[in-house]
Length: 171
Image (cartoon, rainbow, N blue to C red; front, side, top):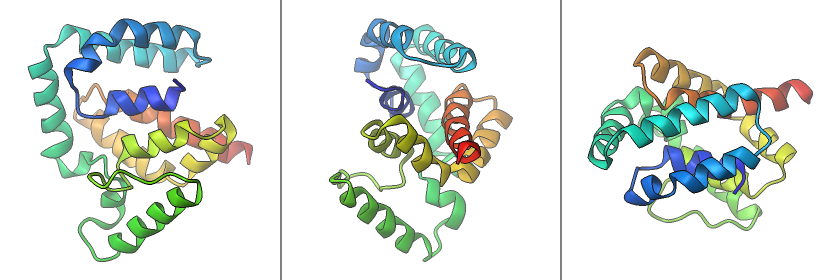
């Protein structure tokens, strides 16, 4: 399970499986080549998940992502809001996924960050980072909004942003 798959699971709606998988996630993270800052952020988030009940996690998720538009995990929302320009961007993302043989699940829009991370998990590390560079400005805005709200999800988004930013610097 590459780091992007782990981040996808952590940023998706929390379910009982997440709580049950904490020991496996910790074991996987121990084997994952991560920067110390990334490891500390992930361990802190897992500790937060462990310390809260599933009901508390669900409530925090809904409050954070579903009820606060500036925290939306649908990245094109941060660029277009509900403007008509969002439609072509979503179509372009779907076509991009299809070029790589991925058919996005019909119940989720292609700009949903956990779905983007699932796609990145199927790429080589350098490709994944380059893919994420396109989203760096939006990820930075999202992370800043989450930090301002004191959200435990903010460090996860910063990890993703920084991985894309590092690819941009190396390119």
